[in-house]
Length: 356
Image 1 (tube, helix red, strand yellow):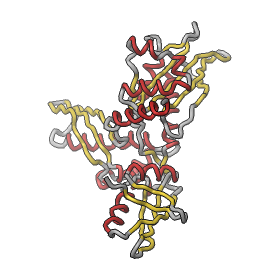
Image 2: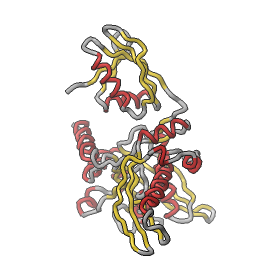
Image 3: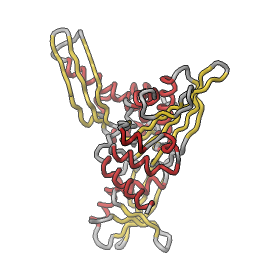
Image 4: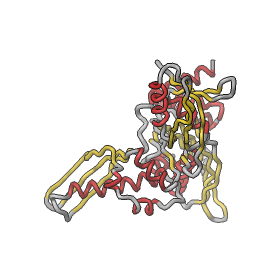
């Protein structure tokens, strides 16, 4: 019964949040202001500036920190590459002595992939979507755990540090009377109560939650923060425990936010310097149309770099799929595209489209 309840909670959260999860390639709220400009050309110039700024923000979000983003930007002609898929000028003011604009840009996933693949630079293309944050601060004076109280400075600072990220849409609980009486910090920290935390996340149309415990201490006259980060309903992300040296809670929150983003990137990285190859059979008894439909479905997977027919007979085709990431990631992504990949009794891998 408990397993069924958990499954229903996950399903409900997925259904509720699927449409709300933004693309990592969507960069919103790019604000520009110019006081000296050519009124005839200012809009075109503003779009160029916004495109470059958004491109830089996107790369900093999805590429590991050890890679020089500015070098990548300088090597790409953004106009010729046509990295923009959609652009929307949300607000615009154009009057004498002042031009202001706010622009939203959706970048092309395929163009970004080609740019980074050509340079063999790994990146993440997945967003966490809506995530319920439950930051818990342990009071230095009383030892009390605070979550919904106004005295919880961690809550405000961690949301501020994550709110501008392309990798996560942070959500915090309202902390109404029902939530305060139902979800106390001690229970939230208990691993046996993850289902209850997920239930609260579902209320806010999120299918994941991050619980953070922060405890301030002092060592040798220096402030330090013992931190525990628990990832609930995340694939392959283990709970973390660390000590952060920081002069104040604002810096500590920024450090925690960076750790969350880097952990996500590390666990969802497409590594172009480590391609993998998969050989499978597709039944061609029915028609070649089914073969090409299946191949087209495979090519839509972002982690797939190439698909080739290696052998074709009257009954079957053997195809080679080159992909990045882990084999399990490949199988999971294929399943999402309604492709059934299984191993037959003779050991041969087979691919079938799941038809309605």
